[in-house]
Length: 505
Image (cartoon, rainbow, N blue to C red; front, side, top):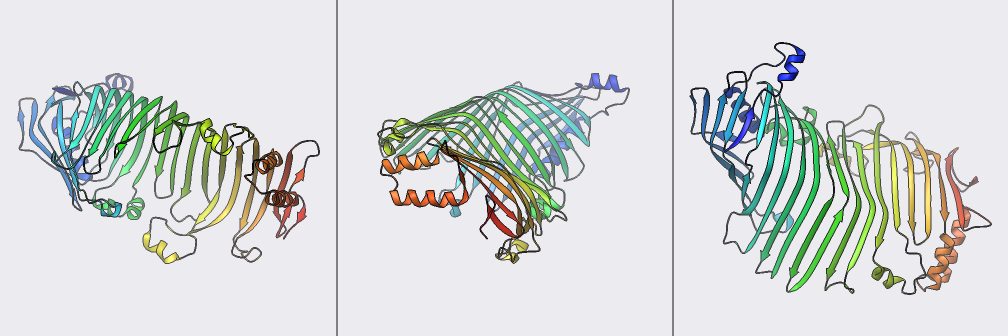
């Protein structure tokens, strides 16, 4: 049996805060809280019986189900005991494991004619959960030495078979559930010492099989959100206006993975590793944000379909971030866009295909575009009818754009830049169809002429095209006399466009 011990971990806080800092909870209140959470998510919860046996509320044959648009989910827990300890705390015991069934129709829009039919087994021995608070605000803290989730085919006779398993060790976390009725506020965080993933699949008809494994260290996450009832969540735009919101972060330490695929007798093997990574997500009625970061990534591919034994690639850091308003704004609101790839490398065999003589520097490549600015939204992006009514018109107005960093380096050449602009949306005639910009962008290119000359010598670029490019660049840039370096300031001012002080429009 596993123990979800709903006990007095708040005793120290209660002593510090004084008598009555936390109200007591009863077995019936905890059981009702569980049912309310499931109902608010659109699930149906039933039990064969829920009766007191002395200090214990015994709930038998707990069945949880969900069905919508042909997708169904069901699970049964044989018995859950809610034991009243007499001091305002409750101990809950339940089975070490339970199974779930998940079924869904074939995803025709994804080109699949195979329905989903899965059996999911969750095993969590010795899990401990501690609860405190009130019936309207229950806080749970949990630990589990091990947690195992196994996914198998629900139909063993299906022609294509596959399985997946996740093993989590040293899981710790807590979550707080607040609110009455369907609307709930949920706050949570967790850590896990290690996660091991494994999977396998086989399709005799397609003559293919797949095996996958991965390990992730030091997984951690946190989130909080305001959740509405299932009926209120049918329309995202309406739900957001009604208060639905969610944000979260997840981070990890070192990760490794291995993938082997055989297609019609031809094997492909892929393995890789990464030092660390993280992701973040925010969505509410006013804005949306999604971003991530990964460091020290390396990948190796061995396959009969590539012209050399192995393909190796890697990078020091990769990152992306998108943040933007999604609803109507009465004033300019912030947005941001970042894409970053630092220290990208590929194996010498790849370089050898384009540079067999080694004429070019094989330095790691880098690309960074980091921008932010202001935009006024005139249309709710999640309102499908309003967006359709726009036609080709934009859903908002650009007010300002700052180029915090612009960088591109490859084969010994490097372009860098930074600058900023504001936009007058009352003037779209000076530059037809575009709001009038004011501001400048400073650029610097080093090693550009050297790279062009080497490309010409290698026969990868015609001489006349290289000369044409140099002449065009010279119109916009100032060249250094003693080194391969050019600088340029591109500026919009006085309703004109200037390059290094020379008006071009």
